[in-house]
Image (cartoon, rainbow, N blue to C red; front, top):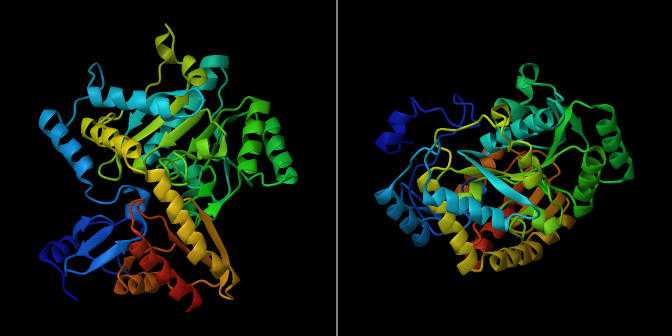
Length: 418
């Protein structure tokens, strides 16, 4: 099958994500996007079920986002934050501090979620040095977790059940625990923190482990993690790259759960999915360890495009949309639909589990299946859905209409009862 010239020629040179280039199927050529639709080169349209890796929460090509970026592009696409300041970054930091729970109020910008997590881990290590002089250089993470693709973030992902397992020998060794879902696992977590005094921080994807197949845990689990960190004086990091900005029904998993971390990372939907930008937000208590007359206590990190003016303009516009359009109400409606249509699949003989929270719906099958074949079949049915392992899931734009959502859920039902 031939495609546009740019695709045929470019395939000789491009290196694609998470793909064995020798055997991976040809990617589907896209001409344009609009709303919750992906328009293919051949004119077909797909209803997008995962909004470009969970980022395009307002749908594609929202005119308010595009207008904000055009205005900023004409004024100033970017200027470095080292010794200079621009309105969009400073305004965005102020707004994020106001939205974040508790005393999370100090915002450090970067270009990607992985880097935002790296910054959070780096802050934790230096916080110990600045406050106590201790060298604490290891972290405690949880099985099923995923926190990014850079070297240290890979080390706090699940060491066995993840795409990063082959890098194990090259990665720093961390502590990996079971989520404290009951008294026994909570006691195990407490024992780890008591025994290992080199732990700089605990990191968790709150309420939802995305890349593990949309595994979900309850609020009580987060409360146990928070209590253990408080007991041992260890900072707690929430990786909200996926869960932030309404995905689970509130602005953050921290607000949904009522559990506040010491450091929180944000990305993906921060800009409404139109341009890269990420943020690491620290509590005032954490930040105060860096606020000093001693230059060596400063956080020595500075991405070239941190506080990217164009990205910050998009993020400010995205926050405007959360204020002016009913995003959280739309998430609630999506959740109702997912429960009504996907919920009954729990009784199916081929289905191991159905998990739904906010705008995320996941159907885990009992048997493994040909993921590539299922992806191709979905495209033939007019939807873009990318299963993870044995799990078929949706995380659509919040603006999706009922008919489009029905198109997505019916495609999953046909596959699950198949």
